[in-house]
Length: 125
Image 1 (cartoon, one colour):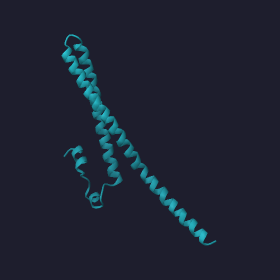
Image 2 (cartoon, one colour; image 1 turned 30 degrees about the vertical axis):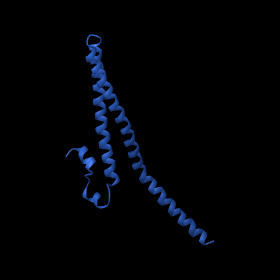
Image 3 (cartoon, one colour; image 1 turned 90 degrees about the vertical axis):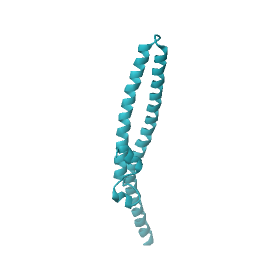
Image 4 (cartoon, rainbow, N blue to C red; image 1 turned 120 degrees about the vertical axis):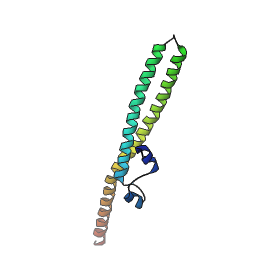
C-alpha cells in the first residue's frame, strides 16, 4: 500500500486506533510525508511547465496548433501547481499549529496551577 493510500485510508498504528485518533507525533509525521510528496510534485510540474514553454517556442508560428496545445498543457500544469501551493500552505499551518499545541497545553496547565495557588492564598486571608 502506498504512502498516499495509507494516508487517506487512515491506516495508523493499533494503539492510535484504540484511543480515537492518531497521536500528535503520528499526525506530524504524516503531514511531513505529505509535504515532501507535494514538494516533489511541485518540482516535477515546474520542469513540465518549462518543457511546454520551450516546446511552444520551438513550434512558434510554424506549427500554431502544436504551440497552442503546449501552452494549454502549460496552463493546466500551472493550475495544478497553484493548487499544490495552497495545499502546502494549509499543511504547513496545520503542522505549526500541532507543534505549538504542546506548548499551549503546558502554558494552560501552569496557569491553572497558578490560579489554584492564588485561590489558596486568598482563602487564607
